[in-house]
Length: 141
Image 1 (cartoon, rainbow, N blue to C red):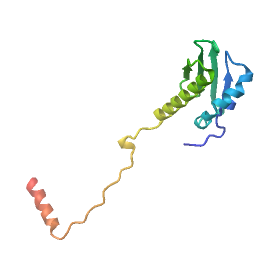
Image 2: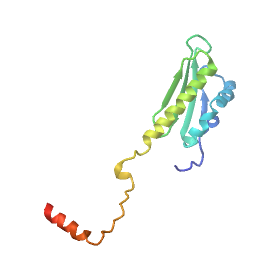
Image 3: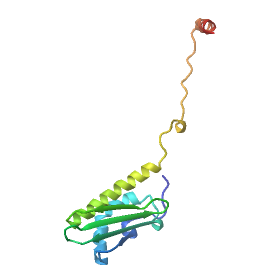
C-alpha cells in the first residue's frame, strides 16, 4: 500500500447534516475518531463524511452516516438506536466494516496464475537408476 500525502481524517472530512448543529460537530468527531486509522489510506481531498439524524431524541430517530471516497461507491450506514450515543457508535462501526469489505473486494485475489511458482529441486539419480528409468520409459511407450 502506498502512503497517502494528505490522509483523510474524521476531523477534516466530517460535515454535520440535518438534526445536528455545528456545536455537535466536535463531539461527533471525537466519537468517530477510531475511523481515522481506516480513512488514512484515502486522500483527504477526495473523502467526505456526513452525519445526520431524523427525529432527534424521539422514538424512531434515525441516524445516517454517508461516506464518499473518489473512485468508489457511496457507503451509507444507518441506525435506529434510541440512544443518540449508541446510534452514533453503531453507524461508525458499520462504516468501518463496510470500508474494510470494500478494500478487500478491490485487492487481487490469490489467483494461481499470480502466485510465484517454485520449481522443486531436481534430485540426482543414483548410479544405475538412469538405466532403470530409461527402461521404464521404453516399456510404457
